[in-house]
Structures are given as structure tokens and as C-alpha cells.
Amino acid sequence: MDAPTRFEQLVAQLKARGYRATPQRVALLKIIAASTGHPTATQMYEQIREQFPTTTLATVYKTLALLKETGQVLELEFSGAENRYDGNKPYPHPHLICVQCKQISDPTIDALDQVAARLSRSTGYKIIGHRFDIYGICPQCQRKSKK
Amino acid sequence: MDAPTRFEQLVAQLKARGYRATPQRVALLKIIAASTGHPTATQMYEQIREQFPTTTLATVYKTLALLKETGQVLELEFSGAENRYDGNKPYPHPHLICVQCKQISDPTIDALDQVAARLSRSTGYKIIGHRFDIYGICPQCQRKSKK
DNA sequence: ATCAATTTGGCGAATGATTATCCAAAGAAA
DNA sequence: TTTCTTTGGATAATCATTCGCCAAATTGAT
Image (cartoon, rainbow over all chains, first blue to last red):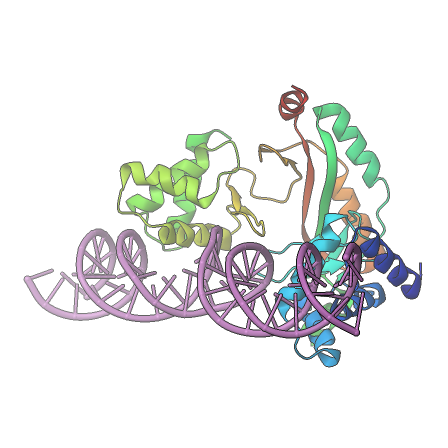
């Protein structure tokens, strides 16, 4: 799905739930829909500030909370670091994290759902979701540290 | 490995690095070696307090930091909740977490290392570790909520 | 359009786990 | 013992996130 479409979708589903599409919220939705990476709340906050200088971090968090309610955004919690948000693939999926440059990418790992299904059978758990982070050093940082 | 053996191992490796085996530290190591679950710092702190009532949470964290340095304990970070510690399987392994009773168990999932190896090949990343948490509702809590 | 009712943004303070600082006490070394 | 170093305890600091409050904005009804 392209960014404008995703943006419209986010606005529509916000309105459908009876919330207002205020300028600040619209700005955030636009950023989220356009972002390919996994931005922090602060990063989005700073972008919004360019248009709406009075905006507060609290507002950003409040809007993100609205999106989380209906699973429109995936929140990656990090203890000791800011959380990261993904509004384009808001369902659980693996993340490859470079421990040096902190970049996060989305690798393709198939058979993950099967793992969950098998686990559900063998343990009796009702599986709700998962979080799979793989830590490593990206090729670029490997090159840098060799110098 | 049984708890006493693991305990001796932890004490030995602490001393080997030039650190003192103080009563408070020994108490923590004993708890960690004996624990089968994934206790929080506070839980261990309260156990230590029974023997050494003046102990502080800071001391617990300091000792845990020492263990982390050499990978003797696995720290499971949770944003918005206390971290959990595993001193018996201090290497990355999957965790099955009940979102209701918060119980954490260690399911067996094979082929995880192969996933990492394959990922390393396809992305060029040098894989360092991973974190795999599966969220669900345990059989016990499922029964409870049906009533 | 006007007014009342509701939602929202901004601001500042609160939260809560973890960490840092500082000093006295304990232990090791000489 | 005396000196030097490590450690524990107490307390404050940190930092991302959340909360409470109020004024401003928006909606809906009259």
C-alpha cells in the first residue's frame, strides 16, 4: 500500500471511531504513513513541530495511544531507549537491529507463523502475538569498525 | 546443572574476575542459581532482605550488572514493567509469556539457530543475539476466564 | 448565528524502573 | 596497625512515558 492510501485509511478509521481529525493528528498520521523506518515519538514530534510549533510530546503520545487501541500501529518497546513505531506493518513481524547504528530493518523470515501454531498445539497456550528481534551488526558498520 | 553447582560456578567466576564474594552478593547468587522462573530485581531484593535487612535495590542492580558483564545472567527488558532475570539459561532463548498472569516459561523451539544463520547469510549482518517473546494466554488463565 | 456540551491540545507535574553520586564501613594489602 | 581499595547504603538524578488540569477549539442543538 502506498503512503497516501495508508494515510487516508488511518484518517478514516480515526473518524469512524468518533475521534476528530485535528491538524496535529493529521500531521502525525501523515508522518506515520510516509515513514519507511521505525521512528521514535521524539522524531515524529520534531517533524510535526515544523508545522505546528506549539505541539507537545504528550500530544504525540496521546495520538499514538489512539492508534494502538485498534492496532493501527505497532509499538516496539525498548527499555532504556525510546520506543519505535511502525504504522505500515502494524502486525508482529521480526526486526533486525544493528546494535551500533541502531538501524532497524524488516527481514523476511517465513515459517514464523507455523512456529506459533506448533507452539500453541504443544503448550495449550492461546497465542496472541509475538516479538522477534535479532541483534547484530549491519554490513556498513562492520566495514567501519575494520578501519 | 543443579542449583548448588551453578551457584559455585557463579561465585568462582566472580572471584576469578577480582570481585569480592560479599554476603549480599552471595545471597543474590544463591537466589539466582536456585530460581527456576524469571524473577524481577525487586523479588530477589525482597528475598535477600530476609537475611540482610539493610540491603538496597541499588545493590541488587549493581550485582546484576556484574553478572551481565560476562553474560552470566540473561536480562529480559520490559518497557513499562520490571526486567526479568535468568541466571540458569543466560543465553538467548524463546520465552512464552502469559499476558494475564505474567508467567514466563521456556518453550522448546528448535530450528531457531538455523533461522539466525540463514538470516546472517541473506543480509550480511553479523548476528550477535536475539530476543523471541511469544505472547498468549496460558491454559490455566483460559479456564479461569471461561467461568 | 448563538449557546451549551464535549473533545482536544498544551503545559507542567507525576510516575516508576534503573542508574549515578557520595560517603562510611568492610575487607585486603603492606 | 596503618593504608589502600572495594563495596554497600542512602539519596538524588535520569529519562521516557503518562496524568491532571484548564483554556481553546469544535461540534450539535436550538
